[in-house]
Length: 224
Image 1 (spheres, rainbow, N blue to C red):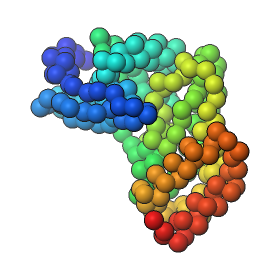
Image 2 (tube, rainbow, N blue to C red):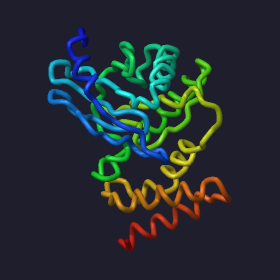
Image 3 (cartoon, rainbow, N blue to C red):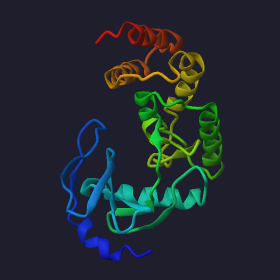
């Protein structure tokens, strides 16, 4: 697997970070590279000649995060739950391409999220802790439903302290409210509204039951 011929194209990728943990601003992607996704630090691209791998290209402001994330993958080793990181260059990681829908997309498309996905992510979190890393920042957009199993595609915060509680709240929400939503399409505007409301409330006095009930009311009424 030789990605050296792709490096000149990757060097032409131009992205800048945006404030507030927003996805990067993509200015230039050269012909031959396809954008697979964006995050707050990087853009993920793929070249047609190497369909089984992707390149995670970091902004100039966040090059240090490239090395930090590489170190996390080295500590995780080979695990069914995570992509394989094949190597690192000046500002990008070389990783396995992972197919599947994110849990976010599953909600939008009405694709059923089976209970084993929740169980497998919980098991993956135990594994992460076993190698002295911290499984934080797990949310709907960084867990894939892949051939009926879970694949976690973002480990960028596993070397940071603190528990953001996001996965625990998702598990509770799944158990309490997902039976009412299973197989139904949830509008993007509603997911984003719930996300904003959650982020506003979670640092204060937070009741998942009250929060979930308001979500279901919006879903049932179709209010915007």
